[in-house]
Image (cartoon, rainbow, N blue to C red; front, side):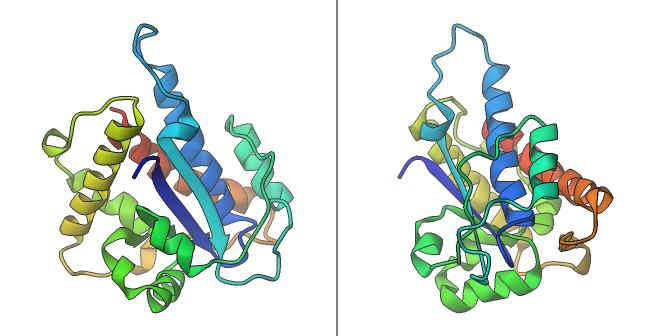
Length: 205
């Protein structure tokens, strides 16, 4: 049921998955801002629940890593209210889409919840397969919770069908930028932004 829920997963939940969480919200908000002012628009939090967790809990309660936060802010996103947490099975159960930073983390998710396989992807894998989706075959797009949910679930199903039983490729993984400086964080954020931006367009063309 609405809102369309996306769970982002990385290792410590202070770098890659928080950037993905907040940049997806930004991508959808930017799509809403482009709609005709006369269009009925629901608040972004009613349309999308983008959140994140880590496979390890050693950073639980911490803020986003500062260079990750700088990337989100520089792109127009918000970092307020973020606190790292360890992944729980119930979070996977409630997600319509799970995006992991690496194939190892995908395997971790599926070890907890094997039945989530058709809605769990490495982020780069999802971005690579998304162009194969026939947008014309999706439910009509609208900035309402019901329409966003229906279209989002259909996008996930279409990407799963495009995967056709194949797994992620080595190039689908996001590098771990922790401790590697702003240049690496910027490159990883660019990769994240490319995929979540394309997802935003698929949800609200």
